[in-house]
Length: 81
Image 1 (cartoon, rainbow, N blue to C red):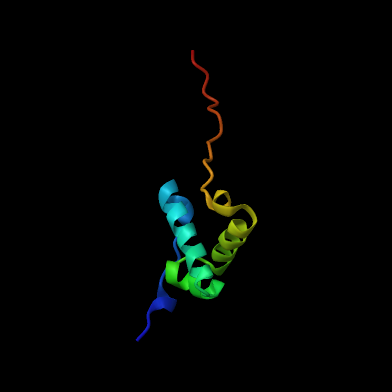
Image 2: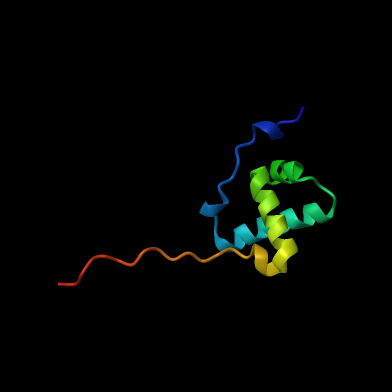
């Protein structure tokens, strides 16, 4: 019996940068192995669109295309007294 379809999707934005990159690179390896985007999403627990986006970014930019972006928060509005 297969339970893949009941698996909850991962919000990769909540993961550490290095873990995000590992998942993205795994998606690329699966695509190179002939897997469809839907299969990749199911195997990795991510959405079809994320798998597709990562693989297309890799095709365009290579490894640089799947590097996790470091996002800094908004500057503090607290003024020192």
